[in-house]
Length: 312
Image 1 (cartoon, rainbow, N blue to C red):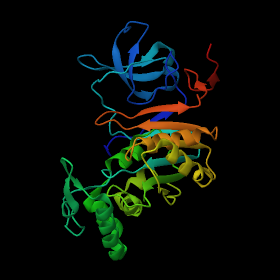
Image 2: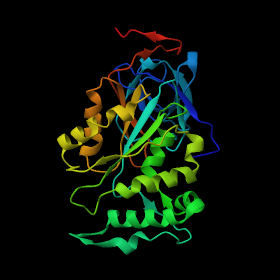
Image 3: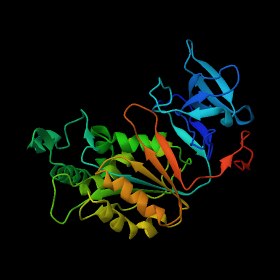
Image 4: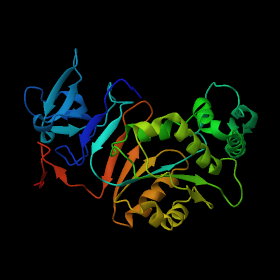
């Protein structure tokens, strides 16, 4: 994250001329005017002037275009939005749900006070892989023994790139009402179980300073998948029972496609669909801006940002 740049403020519900969601980092093609056919990147919102697009020209040129004159495209482009803090102009009370996988806590050079992941690595099939469950348990034990230094220690020696990008770059209100991690703790223990990472990441969040940028009112106890996290139906069933406490006091849900099995984020998404609550799916591509889609379709904001309009 570039702390020297101000947050990018963007309204909720803006869409292109085909109905696809627009947000900072969206690649677009201009359909009308002197720049018709030119590609660019959505980088901001200019109110009555329209959506700010940085054209892929030499040199780059910043223009303001009405949403109805833009079409989302799915192709790699140079980007200036990756890493920027995005704030959605919304008073929604959002519960952010983030599945955690075995690779979602990483170690970086530090003081050496935390157990190194290499101590828990072994050859599995054809890969040299860390026993996430044992390493997470060792990390948690050391942090619990560190007392008042635990938050700083976790932030100094660990990183959580997916969780960090979701909290900083996702188009969320300035404050997140609730953060819920999804971890695994299978009845037959598995080396990839991430249950200890739930508490480890709580230490990391408090020490990293990220909560100063995107405050979270409630870091809730994790959702724990105890059986078949690779089976979509099992994840849906486990998540459905947790939805009342996840959504308590919230009116919108955001689900990150982060770590864990593919069934974990999609199981949470499908369980949420049964509630009818507005739900946002957030994809975190490698070294590219986040991609978001809303279910069900949100009201479309008019080109001036001063009220909804009806799509013809």
